Amino acid sequence: MPLHRNARTDHRSLPADVGAYTYGLGHPMKPQRMRMTHELVSAYNMLDQMHVLRPKRATAESMARFHTDEYIHFLEMVTPETAEQLTYHGNRFLTGEDNPAFDGLFEFCSISAGGSIAAAQRIASGSYEIAINWAGGLHHAKKREASGFCYVNDIVLAILELLRSYPRVLYVDIDCHHGDGVEEAFYTTDRVMTVSFHKYGEYFPGTGTQQDKGRGKGHGYALNVPLRDGITDETYKGIFEPVMGKCLEIYRPSVVVLQCGADSLSGDKLGCFNLTMQGHANCVKFIKALGYPLILLGGGGYTVKNVARLWTYETAVALGIANEIDENLPWNEYFEWFGPRYRLEVAGNNMDDLNVRDGYLDAVRTLALEQLSRLPHAPSVGLHDVPSESVGTHIGLKDYDELDERLAREYECLAHFSVTLRRVMSSSYTRTAACQGTDAPIRFGGTHKIFLLHFGRTLSLRVSAARGSRKHHFRIFGRGGGRFFV
Ligand SMILES: [Zn+2]
Image (cartoon, rainbow, N blue to C red; front, top):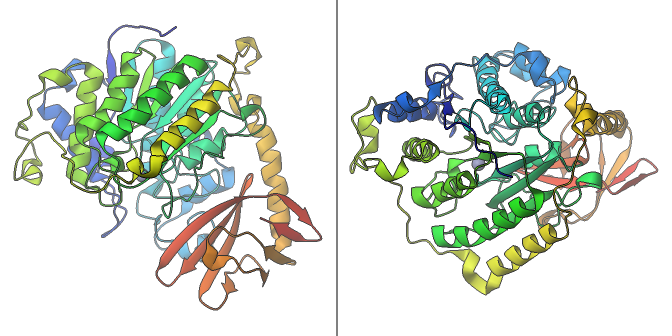
């Protein structure tokens, strides 16, 4: 049964804190977008209609409920000056240029994660119907590594908090990128269902096919909806609503976490979809209307004025005042950013919708609905079984740790073995190569550097070429005689 609680909304965006940090000149992630969002929400007088809380910053200890102690300790220590040394020349913790060691990095992470953890605590307390943390939603962060502009996975930490009180958590991700970090964390449990709608194919992070469904007890509880460029409001609605309707009917979550990444908007600097503000917000309206306790989180979004418009509008949706909001923007500190029309709108463009060709979307929808129809209704868990001190252990993260540690030991041995890579995803890398060593970049045909990294069950292969970096993930199928087959 959907739960209806008192109609207060808890808004915990902390612009003065989180908007002050910078990833560096030229980096597409601009924390300032949080400050702009807060200004706009404030200018629309929405702050009076909700409780605005200033939650505690997340401690290193609370981050280590998901991340390794070693990685969190690194985040506490690292500075722009020490990054090269502490990352072993960009081979550990922070790889590539996406995740710079900027000034104040740990504080930035502790604000973002603190907001999402506190949102989960407030929702679990039953005092609020909806909690918002636009500074959260950093879905790519891995247990022991930063990825895709994300360092600490506030979503995983919030969901672990929710699992103390709730039997089933539904995570929905409408960012343009696959929600890989959250999916991986809960891949082996049925207590969290992860659903990600994302662009797939020649696109970061390279994961999220319909064959990736979860494993063991979690089989079927990871649902991926891979989409193509140019999806419009109408097409998106045509897959989001039937899939989520069926998902909610079958899984019957006790609480929903919705990652509202804004890079799925039309005109995003890194995105490739064609959603308008209304089309994106329709997802929030659809989920909200069902009345589950709800946490709204931010995520990607790189055309900052549109990020601020979208999250302001989605705050209005959460408050139930979207129909009354004035489309002409009120004066605010960033008013000149919103010219020339100064309106609360993100329009679509005339790009082709590749999803409607060749029956692609129909096939994806059919497969997603089939996966859902094979699941039992509302998998149950005895709440008395849940040890309050370590939910992670209860849902199998302990097994995951053991596997992770085993792989870590084997990984160290890899430096002494030849590694055979077979069946590599992209045809340009299909040749079999015997490579020596893994700590150092492996030369591959003289033109590419290959980095082998392991994350839990996945072996990650990062291919750096002159024109940029691509990351591929492979499941490990077997091992013999010092050779890994991926
Ligand atoms: Zn994204």
